[in-house]
Length: 267
Image (cartoon, rainbow, N blue to C red; front, top):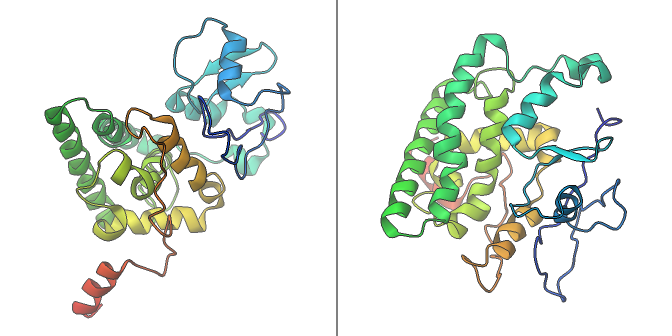
């Protein structure tokens, strides 16, 4: 797959940048196809000079046809399951994130996970009225409670048992951003993950610390600065909060409130 696809890591700035800020930031790699391109928007405009939509990642680009195939993550992840199998060694080709015996459960989970959690943080963050915000944030935390209950009962150690599935991948992207960004930036502050969702917190840290594919593709500097420096309507001064510290806790460490609560129960 590495010989057939390349994954440049874009910087967080998608409009005007502070001339005094260090760009492009750590772990940014240049576009290997379009020399001199500095932003993802350059690719969109090359494909369509009159493009007026959003510049979103991931973007799957066909280098032979010079076209954007898709920028919808739910479509791209499914394409990668089978479309490139003839190019992969067996150990990667045999990875199945959407096993037949779990497909109905995964699809059902994806439905509410996407609408209530993945997209729920955006519904809360970009709400233009108090009632819309309260509806979105309440739905979000109801579904986080639902995910917590499932993981508390079923995680062994992944969402559906011993093997990673699409449900893990799709939920991870929101949960890993939750405490560093969504709690403050999108006002999703009824509860945080590290102090109020022990099963989700355990699941998250297992994926991040024990499965390299997750940790290696999570860059907290980019995550935090993308949100805080590109959403001027939410954060006009583009100030990036320092905390939480650390962005993600080690597996053997808990926040003080959790440590105290565990000590009081003798655990």
